[in-house]
Image 1 (cartoon, rainbow, N blue to C red):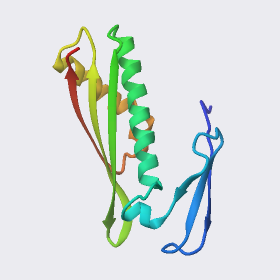
Image 2: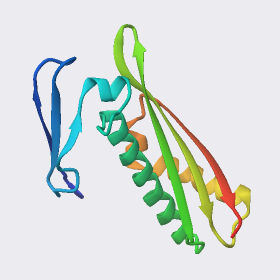
Image 3: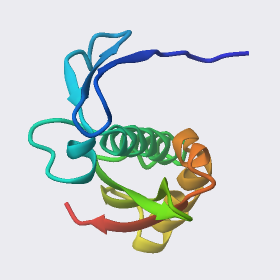
Image 4: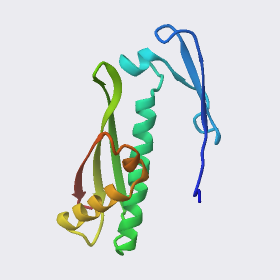
Length: 147
C-alpha cells in the first residue's frame, strides 16, 4: 500500500548541450526551476540539477527520519542541520550518481555524542532516500552540538 505519491515533470527543449528544461511539481513548490547540462556539470548560474534536487530530497528525508527516532527516544531535537552532497561521477564512461555524503549537526538535550551517533546510524537505515541510494556510497558524518 502506498503511503504517498508525488509527481514532477520536466519539459526539455533542444539538445543536451544547448538545450534546457523547466521543472514543475504537483505541489507547485518546484515550479519554474530551470535545468541545463551546463548547470549540472559546470557553474549552476541560478539553475538546478538532478543532483541538487536529490541532495535536497536526501537531506530533508534524513532530517525527518532522525527527528522521528530522537522523538521516539524521548530526546526530541531542538534543531537539526543536515547537508547532503550528491556526486555525479563517471562509471565506465557513463554519468552515474556515485555518492551522497551527509553532514549532520544536532542540538539534542539528553544525549551524549555516542548516543547521538547511535540514533544517526539507525536513521541511516530508516531514511527511504538513503535506501533509494543503496547502490551509491552513502556516508554520514554527525556531530552533537552544545546548546
